[in-house]
Structures are given as C-alpha cells and as structure tokens.
Image 1 (tube, rainbow, N blue to C red):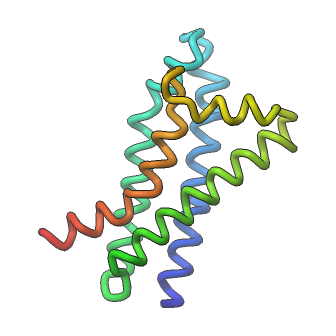
Image 2 (tube, rainbow, N blue to C red; image 1 turned 60 degrees about the vertical axis):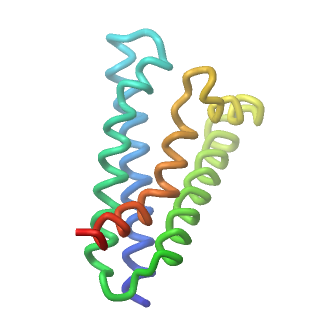
Length: 135
C-alpha cells in the first residue's frame, strides 16, 4: 500500500510537470504559429492523452499486486481533483485570473480542452488496469 501511495504521488507530480510544460510550449511556441488559442489547445490534446496514458500505465505496472479497480478509480479522482485545485489556485493567485475566467476554461463548447483532460486523468488509471487485466 505504501508503494501505491508513493507511486500515485509521483505520478501526480509528473502529470503536473507535463501539464505545465505543455502550457509553456503552447504559449511560447505554438501560439507563435497559430494565433487561435483554442486551436493550439486542441493540437496539443493528443500529447496530453499520451502522457496521461503513460503515467497510468506506469502506475498499473508498478502496483500490479496492490492495485484494485476501486483504488484505481480513487487515484484517478484524486489526481483530477488535485489538478483542478492546482489550476484554480495558480490561476487565481498566481495569474490574477477571475473565477469566471477559470470556470470558462472548463467549457468544452467554446473549444476548451481542459475538462476533457481532467476527465481523462480521472478515468485513465482504471481503464489501463482493466485493459491489463484482459490481456
């Protein structure tokens, strides 16, 4: 169980580093070529999916004996909750963004992909676990 907690925390730290890195890449490089921020986010969405899948795959492989479906669901929900909290905390206090602006980032109907990323973070550990159990 201790190993599961440690790998889950390290997994979240890695997810956070990847998300921040993609934001930097989007803001400093992709937006230099594509002026539409929504399109830039959409272009980087597959990269988000790949690193979430990678971290979930590592979590499942490193915890084969102690990881159950319930624990995988719990880890995914905790990861997504922490990511949302971190996003709001940094956005509100670090970037002085309004709450309405931060909530708007969750609106997929305007082309924002952050809600999709959060949902993927929440469900990917259990999906990978189920796929590994079938193979």
